[in-house]
Amino acid sequence: MSEIPAAYRDSPRWPFGDSPELADELLALVLAGVKRATCSSLAACEADIMPTVGEVSVILDGAGTPCCAIRTTHVEIMAFEDVSEDFARAEGEGDLSYEWWRDAHEAYYRREGSWAPGMKVVCERFELVEVF
View 1 (cartoon, rainbow, N blue to C red):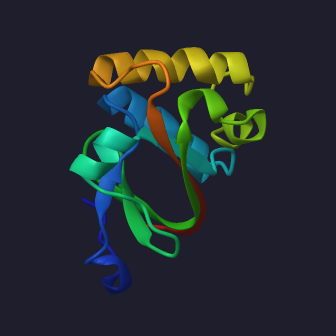
View 2: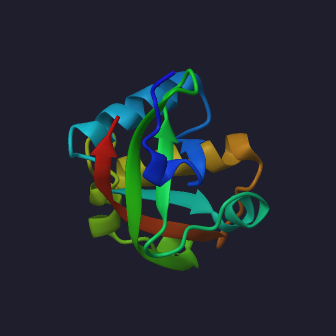
């Protein structure tokens, strides 16, 4: 397990995605500077961690190893259908198109059990602070 710098020991810790493979894939995009945003269902955030601007989180890989710290720079709650193409591109996934983003996220929310037309999502932008 990577040593977490003292400054982040009390920070929330979580992986991206819903599987070890997806966690590793999305972490690699963060570390490469491609992924600078993430989108979660409002229901999941209310049940677990609601991001707040300025908060630093420790990101885990698929094995649960702490790999880096990110700082939330912007949070907005909106209907799934209102997520912009710019935000979809900032997530850095797939072919960077809105269509790819929409299909992949609908599939993710269906796996999570939260999918519904008009559902609320939490759109978070972040910056990479430190790689461990």
